[in-house]
Length: 479
Image 1 (tube, helix red, strand yellow):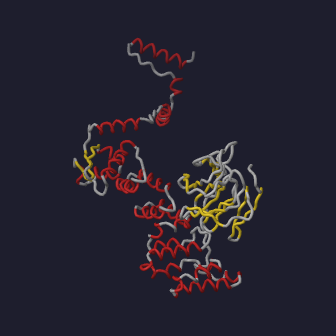
Image 2: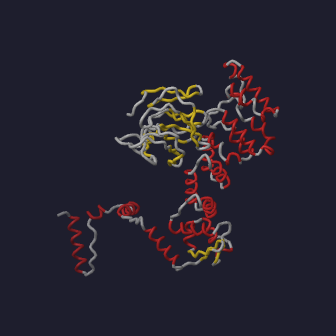
Image 3: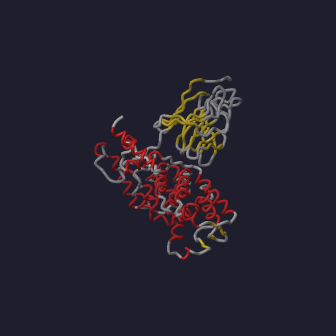
């Protein structure tokens, strides 16, 4: 035994004999515990276990809401219109910076038992106070226009964002300009940009609506001057200007030249300039507009290499932001007629299901027109059908529209000059030579000149402004 160990044992016995037993630490133990205070504290922290209960906050707010419903421990009454709502200051302050400033600042409401909130209707304020306690709120078409400004007032930013997201999901050619104006008034910057981009991307449909016709002069100029305007031809912009002027002709006629300054006439086909623009009375009666037309005519007289030398806002091609490229597969057989509709996203390289057809359909004609997809005729597994369904990609919704005059499957379908043509097909007993056209503006089908030959399984395309068809089978008998 070493000398150090013997000395330690001797000390131990002496202490025990004196009945003051405080054993000294062994050298070995002292060696193992030689750590700095900081190291010891860090080690202690590492050995601690922190438990987090994810449902604790939810349970607490549930109890607080139950107390509120029973009017227990409430210390403030919020009033809007004729509706009174009892609540807890600490809960309101914890969730709303508006209430926090009210209850902790130098405002008179700090100690008031009853507080009136103006500029918010009672039902809306009640929904928002319910949200503070429950984190649940329903945003609908009916309440979003009052809910968003009220949420902004109370600085409930999650509710405000939910309202913006809802409005963004509802964007449509018939309402995008109204949503844009609403977003501008309430400083919803992202929604404003989304609505404006939507209006630019769907301008051919937007220009047909009441919202466009009711825009102010500055708003129209801003829209039609955008380089990002998505139009297949500058004809749409010219037609939009004429429509806007004619909507309130007497008061708007003086603005004709100011608007035409933003129409890129040199980019229009020469035939359209001569046959349509030059013949328009609003152009003939305005010297400045006639100057714009002459400029366009001169542009067309120049050789192609010299046209590039003329640079002004009216000769600059528009550069629209391209919409996401997708392919839609509608109906079909598997092995019977089906309702399934799938969408392929070229950028994401993936397929996804979208809203199903209202009824089973295969061998139908499918076209894209005015921002929507049309499924025309076809076979439902039992009968050839006349029905037509239209798909709104924004709402992910199919709607049935006017039916064709005749039953058709394996027909050809194409769009020309904003009319949908249904060409030939098979009616269940024979091939068809008849051709029908549909106008989405009037929701009506009407017959046009028939083909000279009956055709089924017919391919149809538009070439140089004309419908052309070719057939793969000439049917005289049932298949």
